[in-house]
Image (cartoon, rainbow, N blue to C red; front, side):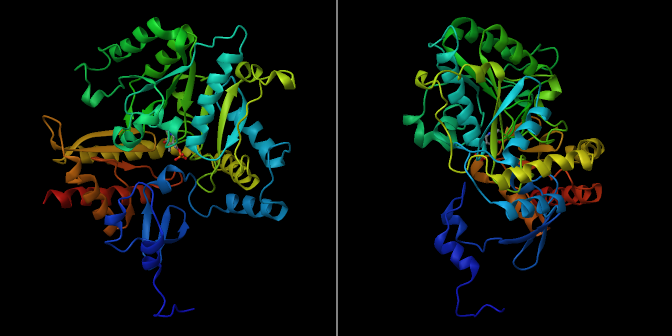
Length: 454
Ligand SMILES: *Cc1c(COP(=O)(O)O)cnc(C)c1O
């Protein structure tokens, strides 16, 4: 049916009614938005029928492409039974079967699955579990009430998530109500604050953590980390061995290791979970983004049996974990997640990914000679390209130069959707992308970077 010309357009309605996340709305209403109507494989189609490559996996969530028949069918099948029932006092087949699967595929030692709805809540749950654990474990260590996080970390937008993050720009207005958390310098090999080089540095940047542990471990409940790579910080990988050393230090000083695998989980780094790169088992683990293959909001916090057991007791002991959300363990989401995991086996997703990662590395290498490309950071299918004003001195562009934004606008024109983080261009294609599509993405990226040099 043709829309009557007297009716306002979708763009006008968007401008009138919506408030978009992480968006300066004053600027937003100055241009017509891209309105995505449909997706197929790695492509998105807007209301004008223009086709785009989904270079962000719809903000880091999509795994096997849009409209994957197996996930589509799993959701339809579940919908024939029921869309939602509660986990409070009841259970559901998809929630049970998914929990079993998650315990199977996550690092050894994690045996219990607690559902929530998004990455921030999964982290929030982990923090609360850690605190309550130390209060209830025998013998209780009630002084363990503080957390440690890495500078520039990102663990979500809720109060707890922000409190253990190091995103000054995002969190400045809320400082007054965030809780105190220790932070340690993050490893950043391109801009090493110690001016050292890996491996001769012997990961010296971990010394402050060891010092802090020695002094304060009796007050520390847990250390929160994005394993292997700090994503929102600008795709900053940690040097080999870093995560393993963190695990060892946590064990030595009796501190819970909380792995935030919200961005890295489900094959994103080339392994099912980033912790696997260094054979690390965390005590608590948060997952969300890729969990449903990018279909529905769902999250989980996994815990060890030891942590779980500290919450057992008589009813009146009040050891219960008093936490839960309305849509916790949503059956449609769990059905989608089961199908997502099934596809990994059926399509040998991780096996096929290996070649694609190598192909992508080779494509990326060609960008290294571009004048503004300061650093290219890649771990699996997570890529950050840092643009700098001066390659020799690594002088950054001013954030207000909006260099990342300029490049992504050029990409948009050419049919590739990506979103920058400051001066870092971030590319995270769906794992299902083929080499032809990858090549196309890289060609557009190259042209777009060149176009702003002129
Ligand atoms: C995205 C992200 C979160 C927050 O997840 P939401 O689903 O956006 O709440 C937390 N931690 C990491 C590492 C993330 O990348």
